[in-house]
Image (cartoon, rainbow, N blue to C red; front, top):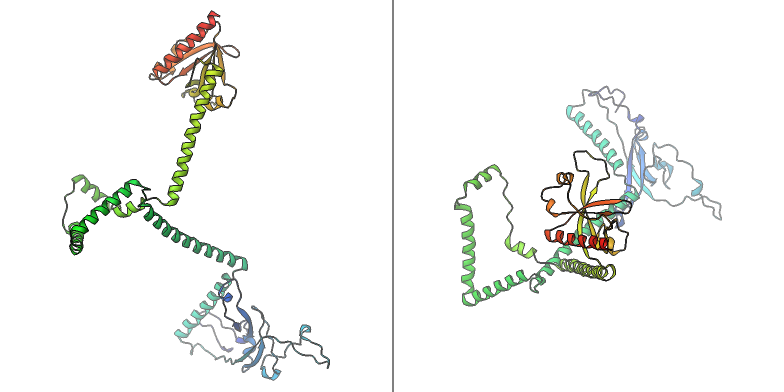
Amino acid sequence: ASTDITNISGVQLLPWESSFGAVVFQVRFSDVLGSFQMFDNVIGEVALPLSKLARGPGVEGWFRLLPVGTKDTVPGQSSVDDVMSMGNPPPVAEAEKVDTNEGVLHRADFPELFVKFKFSARAITKEMASSSDNETCKVICEEIVRNASTSKESNISMIGSSISTLNSVRSLGGNLQNQISYVVDTIERVRNAFNFSNPQVTTFILICLIILWRILASIPTRVVILLAGVGQFGATFYNEFIPRSTPKILREASDDDDTQPPRGNLFENLFLSLPTDEDLRRTYFWESCRLGEREREKFAISKRKSRLDKLWKARWHDVIKIKEGKTSSESPIKKSWSWEPIFALIEGHRFIWWRSEKHFDTGESPLGQIFFAGHSGLAGLSPLDLREFATEEIPFIVSVFGRGLKEQQKISLLVGSADAKESLEDAVLSASTDAKSD
């Protein structure tokens, strides 16, 4: 633009001689690694400032390819006369000087680009500029700004692009693995359909095959195909065009709810119910774990019974519940006690209890014990106990008192049945009576 340009559409145009822009020629190469973002496929670029291009008729000659982002312009090995209106070339750098036997300085070899460029600025006035020209200028300016911002945002570092590539490869590998797993699972289900991995499904398939063989052996194949096609056509026609009477309640429910329940495919569900090898492996693993746990439990019960009979010589033992007070401060409306499970036994003249059978098996110290000595034995329920306990719990509650570790102690026990209550009462009476006899 020239100096007589005035304000066009609110934008003040400056002369080209004061422009900070440049015409950039970038040289790239194409190979396999250059297609990835992490590898730079640019050999170099030549930048021609617009401020210098506007002062002369044009440029023609060789120019050195400099790194990307450079703002300098270095002429090539051609003569200075080939470069027009670009000023004097810069002096030869020390790195480019090479001493020879004749003492002559030679310029080092660098990649160069031959450029022939002519720039002409046409003077535009308000009368010459049309509305289409103004709109075109605005679109070009917006596109330049958008490209500049996009190129800045897409300048991905080496690490960032590498991580992005690894994530893409991992995602692709995961999808491929899922597809292969689906194919393998399908093959395993087809194989397990005939080896009685699921006896019900295998039996059903064999019965269907026998019926199909019988039908194909007695009826011509063309008749079977014809009947199958007619049956499929008839079923579709019946579902689409023949109204079916539905109960009033179902009609009202369908009117209120537009969503239809999903309809599964019978044969697809039957096929998906077949186990794969991985399903069988997991099933056998957990089944073996449960079997081993049952065997360990049986061994623990046998060992415990042997200890109780031969070592402790217990009169009675069972898992019951004991009334324990709560240590946490809670609302007075709530109960200040609760039933807690324990494992208890009567050995000699003592009633001893542990938190669980496991604590007894591992030899831990008991939670408490009562000695049936002196005034001891069974106790009745007090009016306070009758008010605290539930009506359905009272028939199964046994109160035992005797000498505790520090003082006289009374405990309330909850058993599971009337027979268990009778057995516990007989054992307590026997232990307390023998103590008094002694």
